Length: 95
Image (cartoon, rainbow, N blue to C red):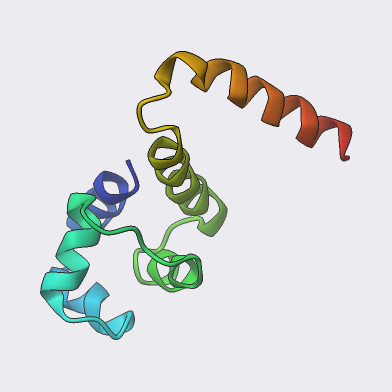
């Protein structure tokens, strides 16, 4: 999800991958892996990507976190909905 989102934003701006890769101090193949979903971006890279792609950092971070959740769920898809409801309830109670 995150990779698709940043690819879409990058293409809308007509930026080559090397521009974003350079801002992240990565080589282009490594950045390409992030767009393809083969590598998860680091949290500290989100503000840089948001800035280069002229998008909302919070929204982009939500896509990033969604990818991490999908990886954590793995094969436990049957429990995913219940687990996410628990997280949602817990975070509501913390406010």
